[in-house]
Amino acid sequence: MSRAAALEMRNVVKEYPGFPPVRALDDVSVRIDHGELIAVVGPSGSGKSTLLNVMGTLDRPTKGVVSIDGNDTATLSDKQVAGVRARRIGFVFQQFFLLDGMSAIDNVANGLIYQGVGLNERRERSAETLKRVGLGHRLTHPPSHMSGGERQRVAVARALVHEPAFVLADEPTGNLDSKSTGAVMDLIAGLHEEGTTIAVITHDTKIAASLPRQVTVFDGRIESDTALQSSYT
Image (tube, rainbow, N blue to C red):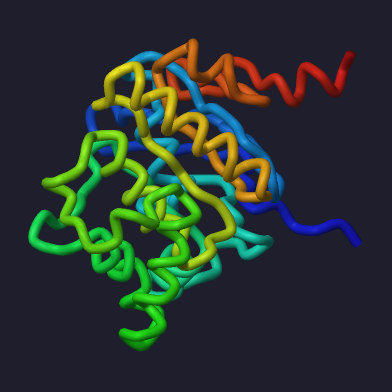
C-alpha cells in the first residue's frame, strides 16, 4: 500500500463574502509527496497567500478536500486541526517572527511548547536542530545580534524542531540580500537531500526555477505543474 501524501488538495475552492463573492482559489488540486521540494510561484494577487493558508490549515476551504498525511481535515474539529498543524506542519515566514529578548535556542524551543515537551528536552532538541542548520556556534545569541540570513536559519530551525510532515516557507528570502538568499536556498536544498518535505511559496521566478518542481498559480488556479507535465512526456 502506497504512503499517503504529506499534503493533498483536491478540487479546493476558497471564497470570501462579497457582492459578488470573491473566489480566491478555484478548483485547485495538488499533491505533495513525502521528500519533495517544490516551488509555488505566482505574481502578487495570484492566490499564493490564500493557498498557503489553506495548505497550512490556517484557513478552511469553502469546498474540496485538504488532507495532511492522509487525514481529511474536514472531519476534524478546529481544536483537532490546530493539533495537526502544531505537530505536522512547520512554517517559515518572510518576517522571521523571532523574539529579540530570547536566545536562538529558546526561540527554537518555543516551537515545542504546545507539544508538552519538558524544558530540558526542548532545549536539547533545539540545540541539535540549530546545529543542523549551521548555527551551533550561535545557540546563546539573540536574533538582534545576527545577520538576516542567520535569523532566517533560526526560523527554519524553529519550523523543523518538531519534525513536521512538511515545511511551508513563505517568501523565505524576501527580506534578504543576494548572499543571504543563496545561503538560505542552499540550506533548503540540503534539508531536502536529508528527506525534509518543503514547499517554497515565492514570486521570484529564478528561485522557483532552481527547485525540482514548480507549481504556478494565477488568478486562483493552478496554471501549470511540472510534475504533471513530466508525467505526460
